Image (cartoon, rainbow, N blue to C red; front, side, top):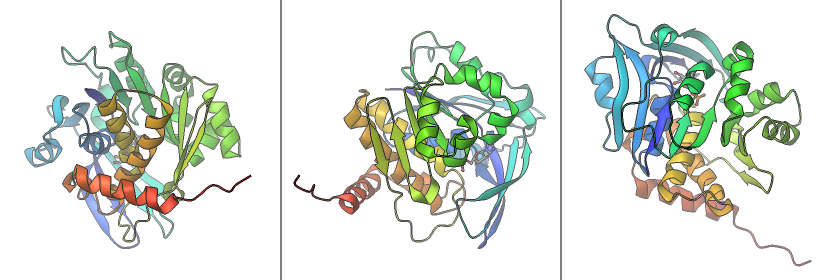
Length: 305
Ligand code: AMP
């Protein structure tokens, strides 16, 4: 089933202890769409500037990604983000965020997309997330991601978005900031009271957990041996979760648990190269193989009691 993804389309400059890359393709919508498209058709909504030349557009165009909703603004400059990592890949410093074409962007749902059943609001200004949500005619299953930049900058509108979200993805430090709780389990419980039915807390190389009123599911991270750049891992995680859920169609505990492992797998591929170098060049068999490896890594018999 079709999945609409709105988020940033970006040029990223990234510094890691091993290498520095300048103005490579990035953005939350780009990573999430590429991760999801192996399992379901994706309809991408975003904006870029005149500097977003055909070589970048060709990179985004994949078999299962419809880019009708990607607006190119004449004389505009593409969103730019720059980040720096030290030896701990879980800690990153944002050096620059230039909103550029996002400052005046109003997302518009192309005709025929209003009744899509799945919507993922990737990390982007919550005002734009709300705007897009309001354009839907049906009642899509809504996922959302956000970050400290918006938790601190637009808490009021973010809280309105959260009231309409089914599944929220958030990383550990942002969960603490949003809930004002230091204990992550308490933080997740507090966030559930803000609106979402399901919350996924991502902990980088320490895995992720999913909490609902009914269950808690804990996933390890996939053991990546050659981590080059974790940028986009969170977006790819969410794309992997939504790609599986949308392809399957049913939201139930079994599928939600499985979706967490798909998210984990897609995030692991993104970390193995800069930009979309890895995530763009995989296939469903490779994804399933890693899925099964994780299942083997955590398999254990119950004790008799
Ligand atoms: P992640 O590593 O999953 O948190 O995502 C990193 C991606 O998010 C990069 O490609 C950035 O271009 C994009 N990004 C960073 N800051 C923002 C922001 N404030 N709004 C939207 N996208 C952002």
